[in-house]
Every structure is written in C-alpha cells, then in structure tokens.
Image 1 (spheres, each protein chain N blue to C red):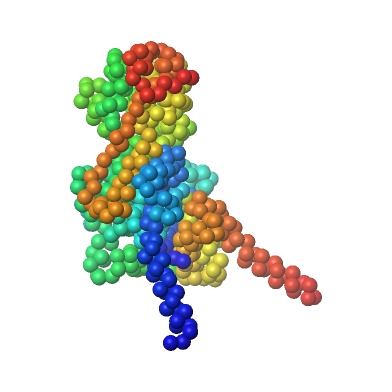
Image 2: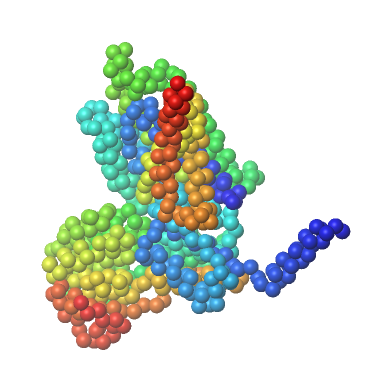
Length: 300
Length: 321
C-alpha cells in the first residue's frame, strides 16, 4: 500500500506541519483570533533561513533568526488589530499580502536553492541511520521540545493570562490583564512557530520558494481539527499532542490519496478531500452527541 | 512432497517462465508542480517520444503521473512516494518539483524538464557533466535568436519592454539573462512587474511611452493574460513579440517557435537513453533544438508596422487573423 519511504515522508512533513498546527492552535483556539498571516510567515521563515544559510551562517542560528522574523510579522498583524482597531481577519490578510513583497525583497529572487548547502540536517546524516529516517528523527525531537516548552508556557502566569484573554477578554481586563499585549505576544509566538516550520521545511526540501505559503492555513486548520477529532483535547497537553497527531494523520491521508489510483482518486482531488475531512471532523463529534440525545429521548 | 507444495512449485515455475518470456515493463514516474498547458505538453511530449522509440505504454513502459496542485508540501510527498516505489526513472517537471525530487532521490535516475536555470536551482553544478544521478532539459530560451528577430522587424527599437512576474523563478532567470543580452547590444530593457494575471494590463500600460517594442518571455502569469499586453500594443502602436508560437495566433507579431511539447520530446529522448542503460551523470544538459518562425502580418499592421515580404516568406507558419 504505502512504501516505507512514503510513510517516512508523511511523518517528516507531518512533524513540520505539527509546528504550524501549534501556531494555529495558539491563534484560533487560545486567542480566538482567525489569523491568516501564516500563509506569509511560513515562506518568511524559509526566506530568512535560506538567505542566512547561503550567506554562510550557522543553520541553527539562521533558523533562530527566522523565528524572530516570524514573530515580528505576527506582531504587526496584532498591532494592526489591537492598536489601530482593524478587524482581526482583515489585519492578518493585509500582513499576509505585504509579506509576499517582503519575502521577495529578502530573497532577492523567487527561489533560493539549498540542495548543496549545510543545513540543520547535515550533521545528523553521519549517525548511520537510513537516509529517509534522519529528518523524521530530528523533526520529532524539535516538535517534542517545542511541545514541552509550549505546555510549560501555557501553565505559566503569562500563559494563563493569555488563555484568559482568549476565553473572556472583558473578564481578563477586569482582572488587570493587559489583553492588548497578550494578543500581540500570542500572535507573535504563533507566527514564530510557523516561521520555524517554514525554515525547517526549506532545509529538508532543498529550496525556499516565495510560493511555499499557499494553503498553509488550510492544512494547519485541517491538522488541528483532525487531531482534535481523534484526541478530544480536554487539557492543554492533549490539545498540543492533537496538533502533532492531526498533522501526521493529514499527511498520511495525502500519501494514501496519492496511492489511491485503484479507487480513481487523483492528486487534483486533494483539496476536495481536505475540505471533506475537515467538514467531517467538525460535524462528527456533534453528530455523535445528537444521536446520543436522540436515543435517550426515544427511550424516555 | 504434498500436493500443495507441488502446486506452489509449479506456479513458481510458471511465474518464472512468464518473466523469462516477457520482461517487466519499465516504470517512469512523472511529477509536475501544477497542471498548466505548457507543463502538460511536456508530459505529453515525453510519452510520445518514448512511444516513437518503441516503448509501448502498458507492455514496455508504465507511467506514474502526479501533480502537486502548486503546493510544495504535496510535491515533497510525491517525491518521497516515487523514491519509495523505486521506478526506473523519475521525471520532474518545473523547478520546485525538480528540487524536491533532487532532495529525496539518492540513487534513482532523475530527469528534470522545463527548468530554466538548473545551475542556479542547484540541481547540477555543471551543464556539460552533471555527475551524480541527475540530468535534464532546460527551457532557457534562445534569447539571442529572439532578439535578432525583434530587431529585424523593428530595427529602430532602442528600448525593449517586457512584463514579468517577480515571483516566478523561471521568469526572473529569463529577465536577468535578457537584460544582459540587451546591454551587450547597447539597448535597454524596460521591466514592468505583474504578480497576478489581473495586474498584467496595468503593467503593460506602464510601458507605453517607455518602450519601442515589447518582448514576452514564457512567464506563466503573463502568457495567461497575453491578450492584455496585445491590446495595449495595438492601442499604443507598440509591436508585441513573444517567445512561444501559441501567442502569435493570439495576436502577437512574431515568435521563433519555442514550444513546450518539443521540450517534452527532448526530455523523452534523455529518458530513453537512461532506460537503455546510460548513466544520467554522463548526459549533458541541453535546451530545445527545434525552432520555427511564426508570424502574424495582420497583428503587425494593428500595431503600426509592416512585416517585410522576406520575413513572411521565411516563416514556417503565417497566422491570418
């Protein structure tokens, strides 16, 4: 059915997009802020990392600077919303559009190849693992470290204040929380995570391209919702695990779709499949609920 | 020996016999970044060329074909899928798809196609001797021949305009080359950027008064909206030339036939060489050889110039509309 390499590829891409799902969890779920900046901050992270790697800097340093660039982009969106009172969705669309030009300026051309450069993956190939196992190992470690840090952050005072801001801004303000700052910090963190994903993706793909961000938001949302459907996120840790598991499941679903010639599916159907999966994931839990209600009513 | 072991042995024998009689068909896996007339023509060209060289689809060769819907993450999964399937050759159409395959495939022969700048894309370090497991066909335009044509029709032109999408890697590589070639001739290039098809008209208008002639490369975004540039050329009397012949029938003055179907045919030749056992690292990277002149005299008149009888005589195809 699926070859080993295709499965590893799904895990590799899934772990990277798990970071995107973390970011989207922060904006959509914690802060209730529909943030489309990610379609621009994903290639921004790729662009910054690629330019620095080409310039001879250490790839981890380049990845770190990419995270900061993503945070700056997120902060711009949040400031447009918080300080200039622009509707959150519109603010994020404005930043996303602006980032296209910014990314082209940073890269100075639409595509920077990293195929022959030293990346964060290079030293790991000397471990003696199979070629396709290396990225999965490294990105698993990165995803788990980020998950742990996020989990700790969510339990810190700042993290709790951020969750309160999303859950009930009026109440949070009454408790003396600076909700504006919380939104700026949260959206900055969210886009920093997405830029990290972009930086790692460019390094595993061998190129950064300005068109890389197309549909990142949809894939991230699909991963988030799919993971929630499987995991039932009753607490922060489960919600974060759901992000990673959902992202990997989404990629396995794509890998299966690529192999589903026998039922007549083609790659051009992927967008439709994604939409159907997300819809099912949203509807099914509610459906289960209403069926239960229906049964208990009919018994009464 | 029980009867079931006999059965197994016998069927194994039959299977081996079948294998000996008929060799398994070769497997060619094709990945392209997006469905697009030019890129689809490449795929068709590959198949037709292999058929012409005796590879019947089904019996001698089978194809796997996937498009990434312009999504790099999908392209990367397609590349991984193909590497896992271990085909005889992977054909990667356009730069992003070629890069994802190059990152994933270590020992499977890879033939890229429709990549304008293979060295810039780091697919190979050397066009003559690529080394490793990768070779291919570039779609770099024969810009000097094209400029000769433009200057033959409009000898007084000093400023050549072009519309391009700064987000398209291939288009940017072409425009940079174009600028160099024009400077070498003491002429200037006037660039107008359009990031979307809806911006092409405005970009073309910005060239009015700044350019004596317009030359369009094979930029996907701009060619999708070529009519917008042509209408500006007709109103402002600026002759519009193209790189691909299809645009001549849509109203450009002339083009020296660059056709993506030919790119595909050339790619097919390289694939066939690898299927018959050649090492991809030994096959130099070439461009397209077949070139034909297409002209459109009526379009020329609408843009305020006359095509000389000599040029019309030379043309392989004269478009009448």
